[in-house]
Structures are given as C-alpha cells and as structure tokens.
Length: 396
Image (cartoon, one colour):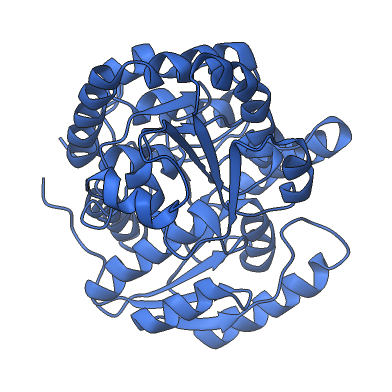
C-alpha cells in the first residue's frame, strides 16, 4: 500500500537523548528518509557524533545539552528546549526515549502535534520508588502526546497494562538492508582478529555495556559454553558504564572492542550473535545480525518474538537472566553449523520482508500525515502499522 508523505516543507523537530546506540540509529534513519521526502528536519540533541552525522545529511541540528537521566538539571533542560521550539516553530515534535519524552512534553504541553516514542519503557529500567515515579509520569504525560509510538506490539501491551492511556501506534524497527548484508566471514575475521584461530567458533554481542543489555549474564553463561565448545571466543562490541566491571570478570577468551565506528564487520565475522537483554522495545542488533545472515540468540523480552521468524523464535529465544538456558542455546548452535546457516538464511529473508527501514519510514510518514492533517482517531482507538489480531494494518 502506498504510504502518503506529509506535506513537503512541513517542519519536524526530533528530540533525542541518548545520542548513541539504537535510538541514534533510528533518529538518523528517519531524518535521512524525511529529508529525502522534502520535509524540513531539525534535531535537538547534545553535541555528539550523532549531531555531526545528522548535519552531514543536511538536517538542521540544534544543540540541546541534557543528561541521560532526570535530575536537578531538568528545569534548565526544559527552558533550553523551549527556546529551541520558539526558534524552530515546528509543525510536529517527535520525542525519542524517556528523557527527551520527559523534557519535550514539559516544554510543548500539547500545544502542537507531539509523538512520543519510548524505545523501551523507563519504568522497566529501574526499581522501587524510582520506577513508581517514572510510571506515574508516563501515565500523566500521555495526555501531552497525540500518539504513543511503540516499536513492538509487546511494548504497547506493556504500556497499556501499566495503565498508560493514550492513542497508540506500533511501528516495528527497521534497518538498512543495503548496509547490513551478508559477506564471507573468513576475510573479515582475519582482519579483525589477526592473531586468532580462524576456525575457532566466534560469538559476538553488540550493544551498550550496561545492565539493560545483560552482558553480565552472558559472561556467567560463557564458562559453560567454553567448556562445551573448546576454543570458542566471545567479543563484546560497544562501550558503556559497565565496561570496567565486566572486563574484571571476563576470562581470556573474551575480547572487548570498546566503541567502534562500524559494527557491520563484527556481525559478518560472527558465527552467532547474542543479545541477552533484560528489557527492550525491539532491539536493533538482532535485526542487523539477521540481515547479515547470522543467526541470533536473544532473551524473550518485549519485541524479541516479533523480530524473529517462526523457526528462530522456536529455537533462539531464552528466558532473561537465565545463564544456564543461555549457555545451552549458544553451545547448541555453535556445535551445529548447518543449522546456523539455515537459520541465518531464514533470518535474512524475514528482515527483508518485514524490517526494512524504508517500510518503517513509510509508516512514520503516514502517521505524521494523519496528525498534520488534523484527523485524530476516535477516543480510545489504537492505530497499528503491523498486522495484529483485531487491528487493521497500514501495510496491508
């Protein structure tokens, strides 16, 4: 089905903090597609590599310094954002992730069409009183979002069950299938790991080194994997607040790359990609790995089942925070090369058909068109852009 574009010249303001990881890639991909469609795209974010990348695309980038988490700096962040809004005068604001959603909705307060995309709910990331405060805010602030955009149906259900009442859309994450494509592992692996045995099984985990991504669980599982699959190597690609702690616990068979400019070679070098997250909305790393024809093992958190074809969902999902189950799944696939190859091919086909970034950008364009056209859905309605039981699909 053709996806209508918002009017050429419409002014869209994206707000984002954080400025790395999956959120940054989503914002970059949307900005690229929207600029190509003729929209005037402004992004407010802290000074960062993301800001430089967006400027290179032709986006208008406004420096908005903000921390990743709420704190005493919040009032100043909201005031600075209000100044950006006054300068840019956008037709629509799209706030990405909890912090930008907090500051953005406080600054806008429903005066212009506002889209909030949590990219995983903030109240899942914390506990105790902090979680209660985060949930209370999300329930209250939903009134200041014309649309709540979730990247998976599971993420939407989590929000709805938590008592967040709003107008929902589900727009599955997409990735650039021209950038993420298969290539032989041998040459790539030789360049990345020149001193390693090229025949040794290689597991790769791509993600920010933090509690959410669960690398600590993977390290707990790794001893059992290494015992069952002699010579196996694990590479943790990325950086983050847990780097030092994780490195202190890792055996010699685990390599830390730190931040890398391009993750694609690491996917291509891998025999298997693992993401043991504690929570997600819909992670990009498994989609990127599958696009490179590499099988994955992921934890059964929000978005995981929806991002995998049926064959992988039945074999490659494990419970979160379960090192034994994770070790069994990883070792089993490392010991079965034909199965890995088959799952990788199925994964690539699945991503091409359902998670191409052009499909995602088209769905967001249709949503903007609806909001800018002044045709709000009936109270309590749920707009979905994926086929879900009892809901119309914009893609159908």
